[in-house]
Length: 121
Image: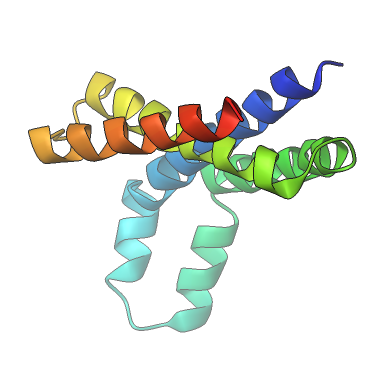
């Protein structure tokens, strides 16, 4: 497995996990549970939500792949690639109808420029 593809795969897994967890937390069942003061009910509803479980499963898989990446690369080379997650999250957010402001887009462009500078070294 190519280390670059593995590192990018970690970013994809992380962003996908974020959107799954967001979907789970936005579900009717979770919102209804959050409206009640019963902590155990809220915790059970959240932790048994399929989208949230899927998100955490993807995070776990990403962590395993990340260990493989770190065994081959310096952290100072690998970790900046995680910044690409900001760009991907912005793109996916835009595609699903989230508000993407010019300021957010400019911020992500700055992050991507930094990732490019670091990866070129």
